[in-house]
Length: 297
Ligand SMILES: [Fe+2]
Ligand SMILES: [Fe+2]
Image (cartoon, rainbow, N blue to C red):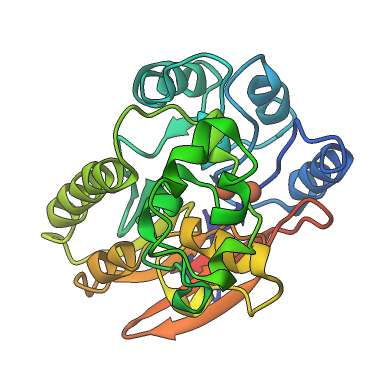
């Protein structure tokens, strides 16, 4: 803790989307961690997409941090990417163990509390509530994580076009995929997974809100549509379905003590004041990385 003008403050260092195992992103991640090691601070918060689950990239990446204070970890969708068949077990059993062994705090299951400040975390997820209706894509394609144009080219998704009556010419011309469809194996619907995560986060927020303390939330996926990137291409507009869920934001705004929510995932820096809280996307991506600081008194 630092002492600034007579008040006890806690400086948080926050980043996301290090993508350590991505070739273009790797050197930028190493460089950003070196900058963060120089920056000082009291608590470190990493908000998802550090590395995928297979192999030991996660360990290699987190071991580069030199930080004396508490180190808080939130998983992103990329931590659930695996060549194995069990992303849910990786998420609920394997990752908490691995993160703990590295001396990091697995925020998903246990909020971090220091004095009057609490930090809660969740991977968050998506329910296609951010899907762009202008694309005219029926929901079953979002659930399969392929657009109609892509389904037409992929044997395993052809059945989605058995009845084409609801597929407009515009939708049929869109060729895009969301790669969680290939690499995340949850064996439940995205809506079911998100509902579970929201229950967990809601329980944590309720137990913390009994105390008059400030709560900072770290959620990998976007909690508010206001943080979505601007229109770019149909492929990117298709991807918006997977950027987050307005259910996350609706939960957070119910708790007056939540002052800030930090997210990542879209790789697009954005900030919005929503009700009483400040929503911030760190905005780290494959081509540029950054970290933010927050001083809490
Ligand atoms: Fe990411
Ligand atoms: Fe992500």
